[in-house]
Image (spheres, rainbow, N blue to C red):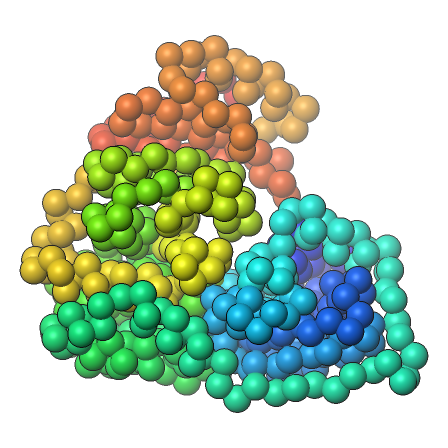
Length: 449
Ligand code: MG
């Protein structure tokens, strides 16, 4: 691993990520793709990319790696991560690679790896690829077993059609919603306007060319969407949708220009889905109680998984969940697939608005409100087990979950302590109805350091 540059190459169970021209070189991309494709000689591997300007360079390097180990490459061009996942599953491919650095700034790119079921590799599968990459294990094939590349012109149609089949298109269309979509020059620019138009919306798209020249820092957080909020308010739109460059995450702005928070994307989707059809829900450990409350209010059982899409997906399969996701705007609807999908998230939220005659701001005001605080404190790794023990006894009156660090939950508040994998720090998340209570929970952890 290259650890001398300012932003080192990050090899993880979910793939690889780095800075173009520094840590993420064509050689790294080719080797990583070859490490991924080595066990699936002859297999069809779908590739797509999120629109970043470095995507074309990465695409050629990835294709070289996959072809060199005998894979058949299906290139679907620029497409969202959920579109790629859906395409893999629907066409029975052996796997797929999304060329993306998700919400990271434009100088980054990376590879996200899929399993044949159309969602991200399990940690064990991802680790096997990372090991092959680091040990340079590649099953190169001779010239007569090198395949060609199949190019697919419109991979979006099947994904869009699937999403449309799951909502009441007529009910949504009858409301003629005006939607401001911030695609921010990512892959959402390709399916977003099409999907929304087919839902009968009047769509105004910002950053509508998928060329990676982001107009703002791409993570769809409150700070990065301040201008967008003003634009939604000025435009008179009913709702603003903002997606990250690979369009798996969705943030929502109400018609008054308020950023309602990525946590509410999932909470709204859950509230809507369970109102018709209650069933098990899976949330990651760091997701807000808002989602848990709306699910429980409808009589649903809520399960918590480790943080990470693969963990949420696996727990959803285990408990036959009807919906799941992460509080970063990541809605997972198993009817489409086990990956975070902004397309189904948009459709569900619009269907909710179509059925509930109130405007979005009023709906959100009627939902529970919590305050989450995210802190990080430096800590020596070897002192960590004792720290967690002390915290367990300190918070002995709460419900303890040790699946992902330590999470202690009470009726209406919780605190989670997790060690970072990459730095000598712990991350402490706390959530309560009262902001002072969240601060107090973090402080109680800090006192034990
Ligand atoms: Mg993303």
